[in-house]
Amino acid sequence: MNKNEFQCKQQQDSYVGSNDENIDRGNWTNKREYMLSMIGYAVGLGNVWRFPYLAYKNGGGAFLIPYVIMLAVAGIPLFFLESSFGQFCSQGPVNVWRALPIFQGVGVAMVLVSTLVGIYYNVIIAYSLYYMFASFQSPLPWSDCFYWSNSNCSLTPRGTCFIIEPVIVANMTLWENETCPKENIISIPVQSPSEQYWDLVALQRSSGLDETGPVVWHLALCLLLGWLLIAAALYKGIKSSGKVVYFTATFPYVVLLILLIRGVTLEGARDGIEFYIGSQSNLTKLGEAEVWRDAATQIFYSLSVAWGGVTALSSYNKFHNNVFKDALTVCLTNCGTSVFAGFAIFSILGHMAHVYGKPVSEVAQAGFGLAFIAYPDALSKLPISPLWSILFFFMLLTLGLDSQFAGIEVISTCLQDAFPERFKSKRSIISVGTCAILFLLGLPCVTQAGIYWVTLMDQFCAGFVLLIAALLELVGVFYFYGGNRFIKDIEMMIGTRSSLFWLWWRACWFFITPAVILVWSLLTFRPPSYGTVQYPAWGVALGWCMIAFCLIWIPLVAIWKILCAQGNPWQVGVSGRDVDA
Image (cartoon, rainbow, N blue to C red):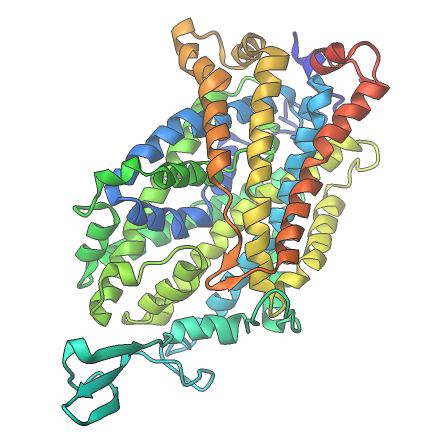
């Protein structure tokens, strides 16, 4: 099968360079822009705020064993598959399936997931923007219990001392400088300034999903600014975003290096690193299913497979680009970044634990807790704390923007592929219009109940749908289109390889990777919650409705293609003979 038979109709794009191989859609200006865009897409917030905590929680250095195994059997094979698929077809995640029309709904599901994720992901960027702006003051506003705090705020532990005598029982409040027998102390729950600042000032958080509350305007303005930045970067598609990533994809590494150098010079840093990946490693953790589930989850999400972005970005490559080498480079860079970021994070958390006189386990958190509570608290203890805080949140901003560039590019690319005549020479309108619509859809996420919406969408949208999409992607390509046929297509691009080279990839694509996804799908679901706040039944039902909305298109499109096609269902599935062909 030649390339022209495989790919669907090409469309015109006004932003095509004179040296572009694909005169209809355009190509990356150069290889560097593609690689930086891919690395920026794969390396996101999860590399900084999720992996280090997972490594610490799941046995420290021992966690690298399941992590590397999952990278080898699931992460790299899926990334290589999607990169090759997009580059060979020169189409986005929906139109690549014109080769297998009954599977075109898989691409639709990927686009819908990217859309829903784009809505809430930019809210996280808005959080980073707000904290970055708030860092331009000294002292940092979360460094102490200022006017915005309540009586529950404290920098030091509180407790009640019960002094028991033969006749008299005394009760008094214990503060740091007072003494009391340890066995007589009962701790009183308090919140740190950074925790209260996050809840009371940044989020103005309500009691639950049932209590929506008004829009938090400083977050709404930051959300608007975030979308304006993305629209500006994508104004000319990959031709403009490819220039922006020279900065946004490299700057996080500069900041991580600076934070690491500063962190290891602090007292207590060694303890933090020991807890992260040093002598505290616990090999017995490898016998727990949860450890392997967390390793698979981190690999799957951090590489952004089954979201459509890898396929969309690769579709702008030149046909004979060495896609295998690129996929391997991006995957290894992504995972190396996760490990590297952990040293920068835990060295400073170790210092924070030293200042508070607590074990590292009591200050380490994941997700929002690490990025907006624990780490800002730790940075506030450093000299020139506003500088470190500005650098950290600017780094989070650039990490988030890179991922959003590719996510929005998925939508823009699919719209252009689907309606080439209507959107001819209107790339800027697509990008700006998409950003405007997603901004409006994201406004509920910046109300006082916004954090609950963000958590709900994150848990449901970025979970089960991706597993189904990835599994059907493998089944469609290797069991319907044909694994040997697809390998020959890859060799058309990168040259012939030995049978020994393909032995591992065949094993993964045909059996190992689908088996990993099936097992993982049975272990991943957890009822949504934010801290101690549980979600109402209607909130959980709404989450399942979002999953259904994404997945329903898979059978609907398959049925539509069969009903409208010429020939039998098998011909529709494997030969691309449908009404649009």
